[in-house]
Image (tube, rainbow, N blue to C red; front, side):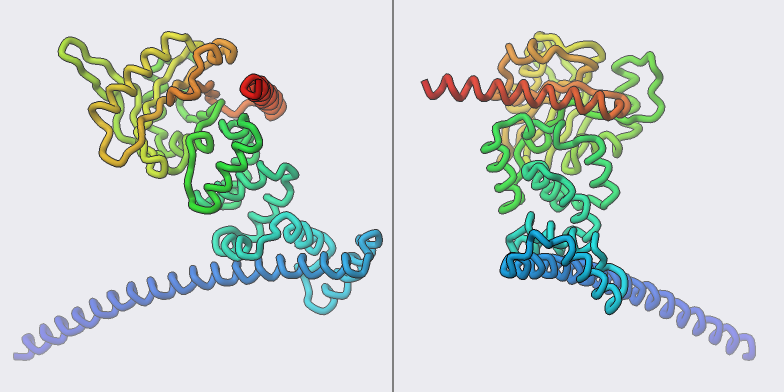
Amino acid sequence: MKKEVQRHKSSKLSSEEQVIVELEKIIGSIVSQAKSKASVSINSILVLRNWNIGKRVNMMMLQAESEKYGQGIVDKLAKRLTDTYGKGLDTTSISRMRKFAQLYSDQKKVATLSQQLTWSHIIELIALEDSIKRNFYTEMARIDNWSVRMLRKQLNSMLFERTAISKRPEIVAKEALSKLSDSDKLTPDLILKDPYILDLAGLDRAYTESDLENVILNELETFIRELGSDFCFMERQKRMSTMKKDRYLDLLFFHRALKRLVAVELKLGSFKPSHKGQMEWYLQWLDKNEKKEGEEKPLGIILCADKDQEDVEYLQLNDSGIHVAQYFTELPPKKKLEAKLHEAIKIAKEKYKVISSEDEK
């Protein structure tokens, strides 16, 4: 009888312990969610506070016609505010707040951004002088939920200059970014890059296309980060068959926002015009056999170790759904990358000017 009571007690304690463990999990989840919401709320309040401070300082100085004494006023104001409220309202901070209010003048837009980006994001963004570049990074950081660290990494890798949108006329770039801001609508120009930086571990100097493919699959997360966050891996060596022949695509992805299949071909050497015909065949096959209802036409990316841009231009690939890009297996020196990209952007914009003037005639 005594043993039965002890067994019953033991069973009861075990049951109580289970309840405690379960409640601990539930309450822990509630606490974590509350902390997360509190963090978002605090950040939102901070961003809006800083915008309002910047706006108010700008308005007062404009009304008082004291802009020519601006720095002196800001210095004295910052000292008094720091004495009263402590850190966070020094000269540098107030100058940043003023610039924030100048560059992001739409209060509704700022209110939305305050829910998605931190003040640390804003500091990085307001340092960009080019408005199109700044809008690009603002929207991409927002839509892809970049951390501050990721934003800095993308800035350092010159993401904007590598995207197709940087090589388009200003009016086209502004329209694409406006659509992204208003309706989260991505266009291929915002995600296609040249060059791609394939910073992949485990790739020897002498490698084959198969080696490159294997390393990409081993480092798939890294590769997709470089392609863009909405890319979903579907298949390697995708078999495409006719009655008499099988062909194999290196990598097949799907882009959720674009609602398109994306075919990726890897080439170790320079781009050749024959690569275009190969990719066109893949895209036609995918369009006929794999595209689902509601999806757009498939896109193709040909990644080459090198390319002659003039050679690519002769093929007029803009409307074909094929994007030819160079890849680097590591990030090159920034000056070298900068020079290459600025030259590519200059050539592309000159080309659009020529096309535009011919259309006007």
